[in-house]
Image (cartoon, rainbow, N blue to C red):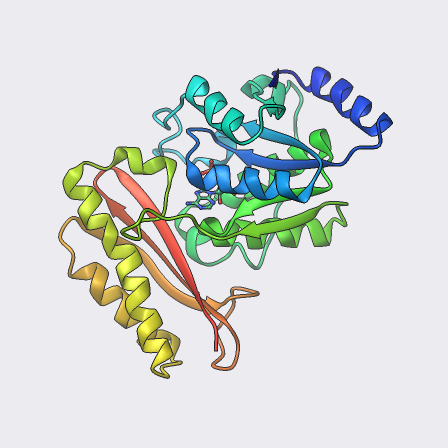
Length: 281
Ligand code: AMP
């Protein structure tokens, strides 16, 4: 495995890969990797090309009072999990000053899809995400980049950015990997104690209850939100941040004849968890 820590070294590696005529496939992460990240890596490797995985806890996408300092980190474990999928992967592990050198002054702001959901709860979050991903795309210059649909709004934001800036990269969204009981895998699940872990199940359970109502013909977003919200509100130890049912494509108002995304965010113990499910006619 090839561990690269500087942008200069990454540039040299990228030039050599281009000279060899090989594609690059890319999985950006914040580390503390789990099977969800590994599924992205597997999809990338299976599509062909040299795999680059980045590990960077991006301070720009954390708000004041959020968990940047205590975000879980485990570089040795991460390298093992990458090696399991692809022993020849390149792992890009930049420092904050490599990513944001003195004089760095640019922000990428995507409007529209970033307005609801986490955009409302976490001001500046998506600006941090799109800015860092744009810089990573410039450095890695991938043919394809893989993102998890667990962070549904993030994928929508990156797709919008890539279309608007005409960036030469294909964005591939991959299904959410879950525990057998339905809990979406997340690096932040490490914050959950045993009781929190139980309470956290109410997110996927609420979304499933919403799916049942949808399958039974319910198409009113506010009724669906009520069905999902009731499950969360009935669960001790869960504080709801939002429950919203929106158009699955543009994240604007849902319409009955188009796919909808039901998205939830809730505080459980010390963790803020998100989950979503797409309801399709
Ligand atoms: P993170 O390290 O949390 O920033 O996530 C890095 C990438 O992994 C993002 O594209 C996430 O959407 C994706 N990801 C995180 N959790 C999961 C999961 N449970 N299933 C699929 N992809 C995931």
